[in-house]
Length: 61
Image (cartoon, rainbow, N blue to C red; front, side, top):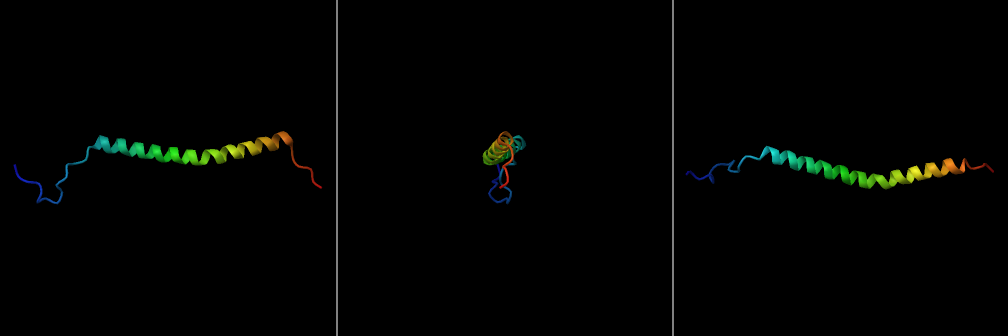
């Protein structure tokens, strides 16, 4: 059996299914981190709008 050490592309070809799976997992991780980062700000904005709707506008002096 000839040695592969002399060839520049001596690595085995990538498993396409594994590449797709890893890509999907990476995308899911990015989306999850993004949602975890933006969710508190969205909840605070909703709470502020709800509080303003309940209390009504501030009276002017």
